[in-house]
Amino acid sequence: MNRRSLLKSVAGTGGLIALGSAPAVAQSGNPNIPVDLSDRKIPKIKITGCDTILTGRDVYVRIETDAGIVGYGDATNHFLPWSVEGMLKDLAPYVIGEDPQRIEYLWQSCFRRRFQRGGPSTGSAIAGIDQALWDIKGKIAGMPVYQLLGGLARTSVRVYGHVSGLTAADAANSAKERASRGITAIRFRAFHSHDANDFHDHGTAVYQQIEYLEAIREAVGEDVDLILEVHGRYDPEWALKLFELAKPFRPFFIEDPIRHENPAALKWLREHTDQPLAIGERYHSKWDCRETIENQYVNYLRPDVNHCGGISEMKKIAAMAEVYYINLIPHNNAGPLGTAATLHSALAIPNVTMMEGPWVNRQPDPKVVKPYPDVVDGYALPLQGAGLGVGFDEAEAAKIPFEGSRMQPRLKAKDGSVRDF
Image (cartoon, rainbow, N blue to C red; front, side):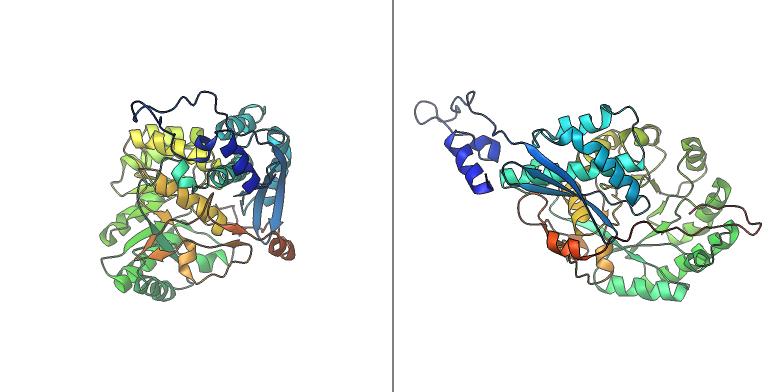
């Protein structure tokens, strides 16, 4: 059954309410009283396939239904692609044969019916499945996903771009170019030149960060917000040193100042600085976020819709954070599909400040998934169309060899000991 036949079938059985239409009203009597809809049924649909598409550096999920409607999700985790692919194979039996419209049920099934839970592979695999299910649900309803999430909490989402460079001057020139195109927030980190040599020294990195920060601030002026990315590199005392030196340049927030394994260290840091902090891209579920939220260790939380369990889990993390007046700035280093899922979430979640937008750094021409969202005056506009609002070219994906995983820099200190990437 194709989508057109499905829609006709649903309409013929009085099931238009399941497709997003307003309830019918009585033709006689009080027009404000709805017709009795108790006998109307949500159309029965079944998942017939849950497959993985590996292309380029991306891991995608394809969910097919017996109605001919296909949904796509982004499960890309650049650091663990083979692990995520394996996890998706483990999870496929939990969704095949089920109703794709039961998104919450399937999320719980994938997470709770398995003895081993959590972690980055599980978070990314469930994220891809969850996104694909929302894509299907939107296509059935003929609506964008953000409408199904409660509608537009905002009409656009502020985005921030990136700059990098082997020197402070390179980074500053790139920042000036981004600002000239209307981007109002820019993220950077230094020590790229040291990464190339597999070297990290806390003191060297801290002072290079300040060198870059000062050069970028001078290049873009006071009207552009600067985000200082630390990548979890520093021990707490060196992170505190960075905060003290950065304060005169007014960073919008400082991201991942220390490693994420021990929230008590983040507590110590929070108690010793008034600089705005953000963390969260390495959290993979609401449970990972709980302690950070409840103790208000950060000003902004940064879950990634491709890593944290998907759109469904992003909404729950946001609701937990909202109670403590903590806003989200979703992490996003994805292509058009993961970006679309991030945007739909950010449009519907009330406590979102901005989102990461790497596509604004250049003029990309994606081959497999299109389009990227339009950006006007530094704000991403809603995507048009049902579901996630992007097209997926499976034939094009098949042409692009999968690159697999890449080894990260094997960072070491002057004494040869291991340092964090």
